[in-house]
Length: 333
Image (spheres, helix red, strand yellow):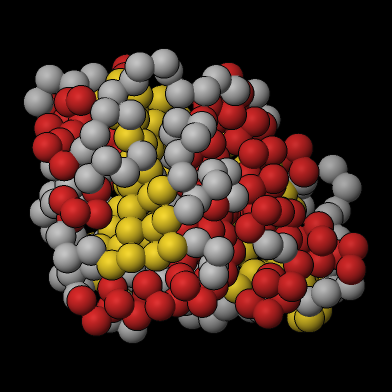
């Protein structure tokens, strides 16, 4: 076997580089390509690994894109100071580092892109209003994601903290002056007769109940990403005609909402991965009551965005070359 030459450098792509290389639309395109590759068996998700402590979690996601000659993983911790994720890409043939990507914006865009794809295939086509539950750093990208596939006229905002809610409403009005943004005092007020609902909170217990939701609604549920948390009540899931997830193995292991749903008489056979939506290209079933997309963070989505970012960086000469790690000589005695 020929000796593999270790490259002299790898590329460091920082947050500024990422934001200059790709936008939400580009991320959606990269994601749809990656999901189609998964559906065709040409890309494979690595199950999310997570270690949880009292106020935080350590997380690793990843995927194989061997067709592109790349594999990769993202690592980050969520704690009191937030998160600082890093994505590492390796060559699938030589196993060497080709790029390190600062992945906070990448993560926001890939999460928003997942909601965009799910909403495209699961919500009613003439939906022009959404409710967003939560006002954290994912809230604005989530609204932008829905705007990319539906002609939104109005966004309703609910947050546990009125000050945060009002600040986010003001931010929405500034970012999207063509769209009405209103604050709501209760979850029920925000959800009433709203065709699209997105939840992105750190709620420990479910707050969105079936009595609040009109027939024909699509829900994007993205906040409860550890087994201790939940946003969606079980009576909502019992009304769902279509249940979509980012990755089946991940939700079977870590989604309290879906684990309790199956334990209460539901079936994992009813839960389909989002790659199936992309492959089938079928619109929302006629007469469906509620549909839901439950997502927890999928390495394949991170990888799809990272591969596109890396390709664009190479083509445009963006990023900083760093010396590739060289082997040392460990002291064994």
